Length: 282
Image 1 (cartoon, rainbow, N blue to C red):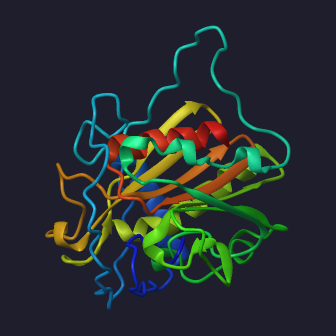
Image 2: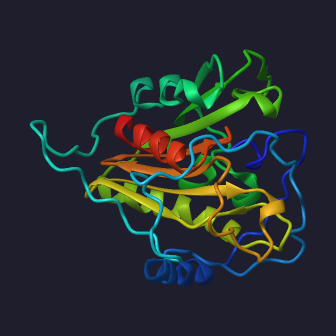
């Protein structure tokens, strides 16, 4: 949400917006293959800085990474054990629905995490894929809750949920409520489709991995994609058998929906835990 998945001083390249017909075709194809594919526009040759930190929390047997190449299988809802399955959220989004620093386990080596909140409008995801639109410009609505998690108290003067130095950004979440669960689902699908063009990039350019779906209940779902640096992209898509370095997730719980961008260099298992925590909190 701070302009690209890589931290540092680079400027993200904004991709041209795809036509509506391409989005519809991408959604249909994504349902079959687990990867949404849109035409790659020319000129996407920017190379954001490589992250110096190795991915924390690699793949584990309990992670929700797809087992079959090219296919992303939804994680089934947990079996009932006294309290039953989670239910979709209702009512307005509050700060209690946003991700807390405790979601990032101490073994990630991140250190103390500072939290800043605001309510209103603003950029909400990776602008290299979505363009420089605000959430209101994309979906309408009065505004949303923004939360920044960072390792420094120094924030961007234009938006306190962004770190002054991009290298200090741990994560950023944007969450809002819709008038109905079906509208929240529609919003979440639209927000996800804005990111999927970045699943295919020219070799050497950073790229998103396949879409992984978590489903805690019929109306409590998340879709996330890991980010891979350009040095790992040799074929135009994310490499098989390599760990991501952070990523982006689109969340939906009942009438609540949101976008979580993780700038910390987390691997598959750690990303899975953080996204699950954010989804349960939402």
